[in-house]
Amino acid sequence: MINFNIPILSRKNRSNILHALVFGMCILTWCACSKNETDPLDDEQLGYNYFPISIGNEWIYQTDSIIYSLQATVQIDSSRSFIREVVVDTFRDAVNQLIYRLNVFYARDTSLGWELINSSFIESNSLHVIKKENGLSFVRLVFPVLTNKAWDGNSMIQPKTSIVIRGELLVAFDDWYYRYKYVDKQEFIGTTVYDKVCKVVEVDDEDIISKRYSEARYARGIGLVFRELWILDTQNTNLTQSFRDRAEKGLILKQTLVSSRIL
Image 1 (cartoon, rainbow, N blue to C red):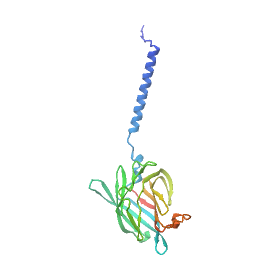
Image 2: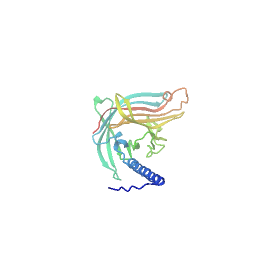
Image 3: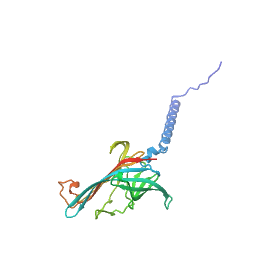
Image 4: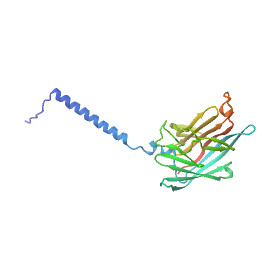
């Protein structure tokens, strides 16, 4: 006969063992959760594909603009044109950061061919996307892409920097502060439905004599699909009119993607 010597535990000992088991399970659960929380985010979660950049990538935009100028009276001119950006080269800067060069082409009518008018430069890394255009550097995106995340996108631009519009100087970039308004929203832009779009509000500021508004929308796997920019000044203080109706100098610009090639 086999004798199983099973000890009889007191209530106190049983309670201690139960507490030890529960504590052990809590430790295991905490360790598992901690491991998940520290797992690195992948490129999709970080949002890198909101700005795909590679030699050969190309974007064509329709640009609609309204330009105000004050002469004897306020002159308002509307126009439509097209901008084409092509990534053509890369190089390393003084700190070994990889820089992409974009050639910028202009056409009043795309059937008449393109005219090379400028070059822009892109610095894209794990922290941000910086675009340098017309001598000014803008921090267009920061990573990870998260709703309500904010940053100083014009940190490399002097606050009182002026631009010239029809011979008039306007202080354009003072007090901008970028923020992700939303992320991964389906939107219909131009003639295309994009499944995942993030919207960056770069500035939204209006007082009696000036209006500054800028937004940009990016689609995953494509890049910039829409931009809207208002830089307007006026001395007309008739507040019964909208700012658009009483503006005297500046511009309203809308840029909409019409085609792209992403490698």
